[in-house]
Image (cartoon, rainbow, N blue to C red; front, side, top):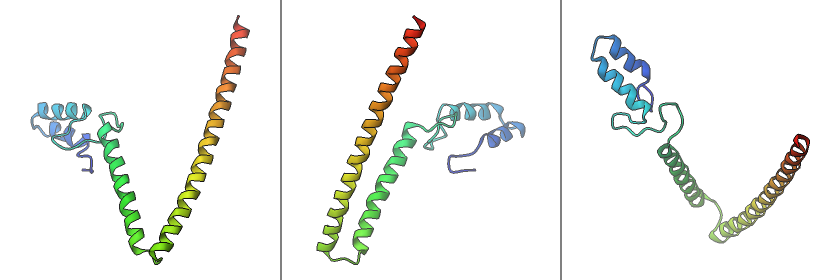
Length: 128
């Protein structure tokens, strides 16, 4: 049995053991529909993540980031002024890096869009 619940072999074994096969079939149907006997499911029956699973993961990551930042601030060997100066410096550096990457992404999207447009125009001229 895994974190997400029992696998299909457990339900099939129930049907093979002579227990109620209708229950085993309804369990498979429930799992395929994303319902699992009162447990929160994070994947649908095809193995794709559900919106609930994505929200749960996002919330966990966000909480972890904030807790990690709080612990780092509490355990830093710097004084308050030094820590604020370092944080401000790092924030400026991160802002510059993010701005540069955003501009690079914009340039790349423009380039690919223009290239795709030129390619499409050529194909349309050839087919006409």
